[in-house]
Length: 133
Image (cartoon, rainbow, N blue to C red; front, side, top):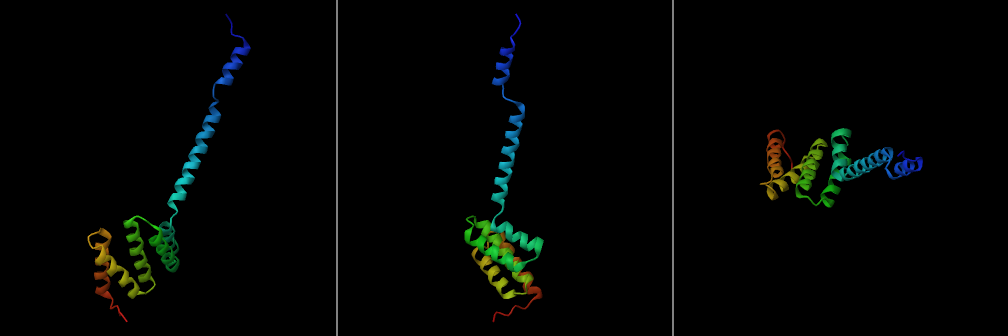
């Protein structure tokens, strides 16, 4: 028995088209990527861009401050503090850098970033005399 053309048409209509399936997948992928990019663009990442890419340390300090105030993760807050101290060093504001690093070393000495702050303070004291006035 030969299938009628109406049977074949009905079968084609009920089957999903491969092209539309591919389009949805591309659309879903684009949405996923856009969402990930939105998540990644935080004050910390913006500050890092100012620090590393643009060497705009004043703007980086502003963004690190925002990250410290808005971030919930303690390690990310410590990273922002550490990098803010580095910005102050780049700007020749050694007193400000020293204050940040000393607080980190005192309050978070057992955390790896607190230990890094201690080492950075030692390194700074080896070649700088920081006037506390």
